[in-house]
Image 1 (cartoon, rainbow, N blue to C red):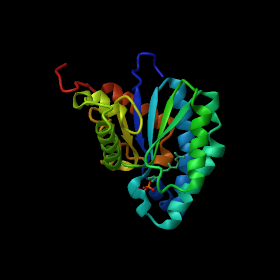
Image 2: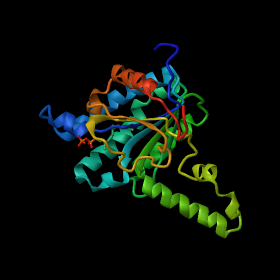
Image 3: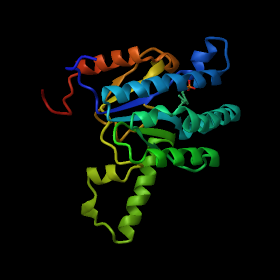
Image 4: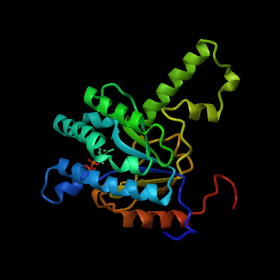
Length: 236
Ligand code: FPP
């Protein structure tokens, strides 16, 4: 990639269209999720190599538990398998993995695989990979509010301590604002993904299902980001 290109500091990816990708090939939906893992691996390696600092991935929303139990079970097993066996690139590239979302009601096996990955990568200092799993912005704001109220109730904070940075620090993870949000599959929605963090993000909606969102397509997205005129509410 050209050295004058600006790489967004924090990129969010809503990995949509796995089911449709499979169905259009006459396959069952879960085959799309399986293919998505290999697409994701290539993308993560690429993002680490070009120097992206933070990536947030929408892997499973709080609402995704409403899906057919067979698909939910498949995804939970896929997460375990991926975290245990497919994330070998992470060590080589010094990627630090963190998770955002509610632990309950994730199965024990998933929690174990998540905790092991966090522990193994906690000292890595390159790309921070934030995996949103059983995540929803509404739930995150509810959980943050409860945390802040209990700090206030126990006298640990004063009302004047609450400002925008304080709110950011008390979300699931203290992450910088999202600069760029990519949602594949041609849907134009945020679907409860990182609303607080995305307030000034640029959005990109390629009409490609996530399993086909290759490194080349990602690079096209970065070129599009470079054409945007970001004003953050001011004049430029
Ligand atoms: C949305 O596509 C995708 C999901 C709900 C699952 C995302 C999971 C992966 C990409 C698997 C790998 C992820 C990690 C972090 C290991 P969809 O099923 O809603 O597609 P559709 O809109 O075509 O139905």
